Amino acid sequence: MSNHQIESASPHVLPSLPYADNALGPVISANTMGFHYGKHHKAYVDNLNKLVAGTEFADLTLEKIIAVTAGKADKTAIFNNAAQTWNHTFYWRSLSPKGGGEPPAGLKKRIEASFGSVDACKKELATAATTQFGSGWVWLVLDGDTLRVVKTGNADVPLTKGMKPLLTIDVWEHAYYLDYQNRRADYVNAVLDKLVHWGFAEDNLDS
Ligand SMILES: [Fe+2]
Image 1 (spheres, rainbow, N blue to C red):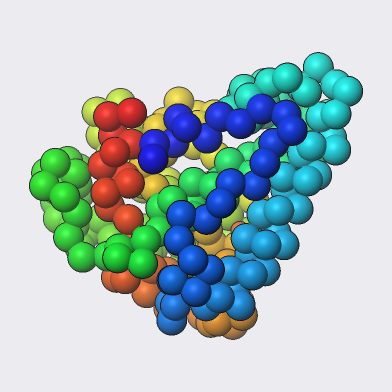
Image 2: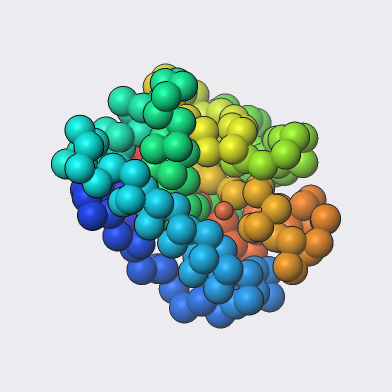
């Protein structure tokens, strides 16, 4: 499913997970999923619906809300909840119980052209994840013709910077603390080795 299908309008709904809540174990436990998807992601959706009800944003799609509120100091709460709703839906799709391994041929060629090798790309993602100070996200994006790794703080999303997200890893503490405590690097490396859904990233290249 491509990122351009995250296009819900008000009332925004919490999309179903693309797998069972215990399917990502042991890398990400059902306990983490229960809090992360069932509480955190749900809260962003619920808060967004409350914030946009009866406003000029009520009939806009999620991506449109993100686009028109980005960088506006008086719309921070709406932006944060809209972007976090989008980011989490994109994150769940960036993972798969059958993830990890080698990217499909088309994506692999693009990764090798931009990073030299798949391992170099994974290393850059891991480094970005461990050097993101505080809460945020790490992304593989298409920037012009080049694949790049970028990191964003808090709710920020590369969509607002003209880049096309291909996949993401959530590095907020709520993504890993129950399973890894403070060991963010262990969480990210396990995700990259076992869960990262390269096929989703490849689909997004052409979406
Ligand atoms: Fe999260």
